[in-house]
Length: 294
Image (cartoon, rainbow, N blue to C red; front, side, top):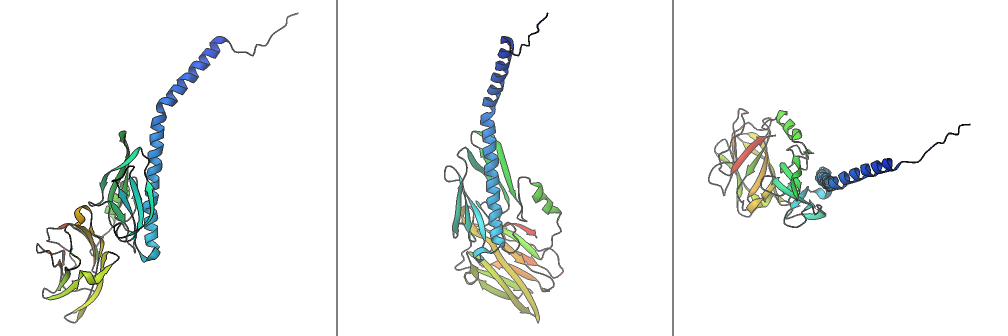
């Protein structure tokens, strides 16, 4: 009689092979752990920053406390921080929350028109300071993320969202311009000159609200009413407090006269000049760095 034995045990060679495979896998895991840890931290912190920007935008559109909201980036502390605030600017606003980047990360390559904060328009949710912000790993600067803020207010990890704005039809009913000079809000005026001869002087100090210039007025010119709205989305901010962003609304349905807009303290030229034929406005002041139709 033949008796068969079933051997369910492992041989020494098999055990050695299994142990060797486990050692290899463990070595790979240990070697890649710092990378995965840095990548996870970068992704997580980036998404939290984006969420805070979108929260500021939603609070602005909801008109909480009848005010704007924004996010200020503070690279002057370690670790870097970003701060959710209520108000037209961080300097004059109220802090709602302070968030700290992981100690292994830092902000870099901040391109927001010279400033370090982002606020949003109360009516449209559009970004007052468009551009980009980078977050990177300190010990490996090649590991980074870039957050793009489009003029429409869209926040994305891809510049494609802002590029889409280039295909949108724009007109001159609303233009934005960046002005690079400190404005003395206590003494300077905005001057509107209609038809080349009828000036309207607006003291800036009388039209300040929450740290911004906000003016809407109707002027009768040769028996025809002219309706103009001028706001600042950023006033005396950025490096040296010398960057302002103006928004000018002029609709040809309500305006049929020429218009030149100047600031009394600027003798180099005008902020914007409008013709009667609907052509795009122009500027001549050396302090205007860009003028864009919305």
